[in-house]
Image (cartoon, rainbow, N blue to C red; front, side, top):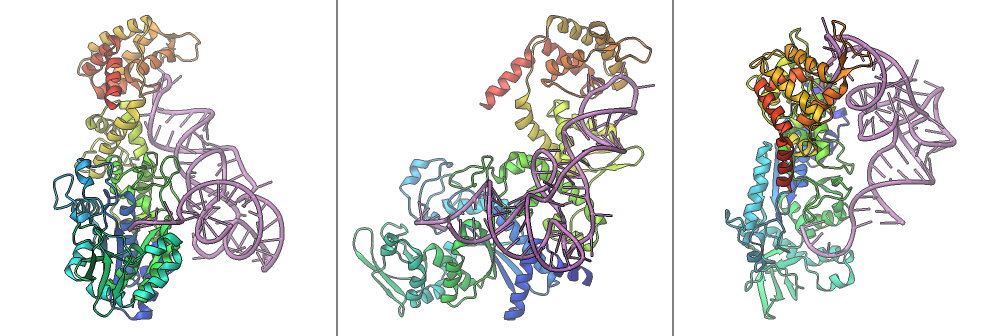
Amino acid sequence: MPDLVASAHQSNAWPFEEARKLVERVNRTGQTSVLFETGYGPSGLPHIGTFGEVARTTMVRNAFRVLTEDKIPTRLLCFSDDMDGMRKVPDNVPNREALAEYLHRPLTRVPDPFGEFESFGHHNNAMLRRFLDTFGFDYEFASATDYYTSGRFDEILRHVAERYQAVMDIMLPTLGEERRATYSCFLPISPKSGRVLYVPMKHVDGINGTVTFDDEDGSEVTMPVTGGNVKLQWKPDFGARWAALGVDFEMYGKDHQPNTMVYDSICRAVGGLAPEHFVYELFLDDKGQKISKSKGNGITIDDWLTYASPESLALFMYSKPREAKKLYFDVIPRQVDDYLTFLEKFPGQPIKEQLGNPVFHIHAGQPPAAETISDAANNATTVTFAMLLNLVAVANSEDPQVLWGFLRRYSSTVSAENHPGLARMIGYAVAYFRDFVRPTKVYRAATEAESAALADLAKALAEHTGSTDGNLLQAAVYEVGRAHFPDLSGKSKSPDGRPGVSQTWFSTLYQVLLGADRGPRFGSFVALYGVDETCELIRKGLDGSLMAEHQQFLARRG
RNA sequence: GAGCGCGUAGCUCAGCCGGUAGAGCAAUUGACUUUUAAUCAAUAGGUCCUGGGUUCGAGUCCCAGCGCGCUCACCA
């Protein structure tokens, strides 16, 4: 595969551009492995941005593996800063009052409000891992609490104590006057209250590795910096961790960008080599505001996975990482269809274009084959999400079987067994219909004339009970329409030359029975939906049940 | 104010190493034996933000300007 590697060295797809920086780094240092890191602050449930960071870092990692033909081992460490103090009680958890007394304690020392895990921190860590596992990421999880208490950070902590002045010299100029007066890069955990203390150090002993400070009750305390007694302040924590673990690559959001120099300087000050960075743009909600955990705006990972595949979300993360993009429900269908298009094009592309195709990066160079359905003449088509959303809207049904029925009109052999991807997509389309389309429906009552016509239609259809012949049923629909709503303009005619049917008739059917202004060819709809079921639908349209049911549905949603 | 990014068809965006502008949706027309979802075929459409520069040649590279977006206290 020298062709692939050579092209990868030329490719301007961003994961390759980032990975090339790492190749140069390896050539420079002679190192024999590469460590990727992503950070996670578990003060709340996992954020879609956290997921994006892991997805994108994985893409760079895979690009690196292609470039180096897998000769340099790589690891991805997802580091959870779960020793951070709980600064406020999150809004979206149960038992909030009970949590209040644990404010400022490390998250791994706060009881789990969900009552399932050892601590709130453990709970949030587990949630993060669940999401990452859903996507099949290859990663190692790391807990700050474990690292601090097990002694894995002891050496670097002693080092920071020794180099205390150097670290403070980097930090102090970046702070406001007020903060400067009390700042410390060490945050001791109070031996009395268990809280993370933001207090000035009275003394730092670089030789013995201890710090001296006043505890919350005013008593002076001297403790070793090691063993989990003390954690590092945010910026020193970043730099020191990179140095301690030998991190080679870490990306972060643009809000961190101004701090890059500070993190890197600290890393060097304590003897490390600063990692390579990539700065990505933040996501925006529907109103153009930045999505953040604390605001709780925008959509969640669960939201996305309710309506679309993990792959479509990965595509969103791949595209334009340096642009502030809107991440909201209405971007979902497009991502799904773009993903399908890219997947379909991939096999026929020359290598160079494959390397720029998002599915290469989403699937670590091994995208699956696209699923298509074929008609009787063997013309293959990709079923798009847009098409399914239309189908589910016109079929007016949350029953997947009705959708399969529509699809089998085109391709008689298609099924969930031979098209698992399509089956999943139908599930997503149904959910999207239920939550975004159905609420927009408006049912109206039939007029007197329309009621008479509908009653006749029910009678006419009843004679064809059990029929699945769309054309036969369509003819019946037309016969009734001709009697009640003839088109007198002469514009439309039946094949035998009799007057056609006014559009009013069809509008009536859609508005009264389906709650929409437009709809499917009605005979075909009846064939799939069922004659008896359609008669029942007409009955409910006439007696007002459809309107009432829709009202109830809307009321239930709130 | 500083940093980063963006400005291409009505909308959303592709345009790789510089070589006569592309897709999807929307629109219009037609096919599917009566207009009505999907599908299929076709048509229409753009001063590539502006002005300079480099070049035989610039949407693409360089400079300047205009417009828009995001980030930049504390906390992480």
